Length: 437
Ligand code: 5AD
Ligand code: SF4
Image 1: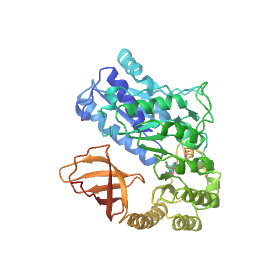
Image 2: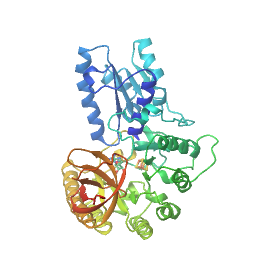
Image 3: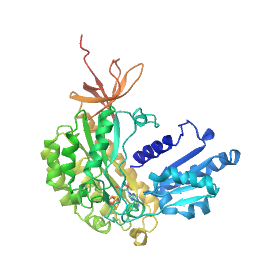
Image 4: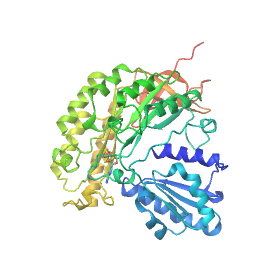
């Protein structure tokens, strides 16, 4: 979501005459678009702001903006800690970036724009032609994100998102379809629909929009001619409907990839996390998914060391890993976030135990990923090419695996090609294709 927000800010800036440059030293404006989901993400922002302070001492005219969740969370505290920051831009305020930058110039003082409203509506934001050229950083011109909703009402006890992104709000299907269509007209081949919990899309529609469920939205987007691949993230297991699972059977361009964060394999921990499902519920949903789409690649998120997590609880998480054998996972040490309920929970786990549990989990996950990847060896997979070089090229399968090919091709980024997989590593595959003569 931050990547998409950064694109939008880039688009606003280019309409104000800004051009992108490659280094912070020569920039007139630096925006840090920030994340505060875990303590580590926030620490990175603070150390980068420290480095920027030095640059700004040499070039006092430079402006520094902190946008996103750290900005939302810290507000004017950020200016107190980092007086060299010119603009603190909250998550609902990025669309008015141009106005706020102008205000910093007019007033010569730091501006704090972190207001949030229950009535907030995500504006219709059509990509401009310039954006489609792929001028914004590392973005692939053929693969883009589209935000379908913002905020979250789930209040998992460890999570800061409901506070930094605000109440859940869905965009109208009409706006979303228009945005995707515009991207596709400009040559985009793959779209990932984004929301904190896409399964509840449409429950709280933007303004007067006609209610539309997430599966209905997927069908509408999939009908856009010229779109080759469709993905989405993220889903909450408690809301995963049979209708959505059925989309993996019925929508040909919906990629066989699914991210379904489970967080823990212990019912007691899940309850304290306020997740509203049990391990048995989760396993039942996973079974239904694989029954519908046997070639699905399933990934998850895990938190280790949640307050009160016993050795037995952690062993249950390891059991779950053995039962599901996730294709991959993102695993994190629990960290306290400001204002969330779990900050006040008893039984905080030491850093050392958290690190040990994380290492055990990740070691086993790596082995499983390698075994899972090994199952692709000998199969034929359609890949979308991402980048080409002198000695070969790189693409991605529908299951979201990176494939390296060390043969020359005349095809380019965004083109589809069938390859045969001949080698599997932990994080990527190797493939070859048979050139047509
Ligand atoms: N500590 C550790 N991990 C967290 N996540 C969210 N909040 C925390 C926290 N306080 C993880 C969850 C979530 C992912 C995006 O980040 O696993 O799914
Ligand atoms: Fe955070 Fe996701 Fe829970 Fe929402 S559903 S509170 S974003 S972990």
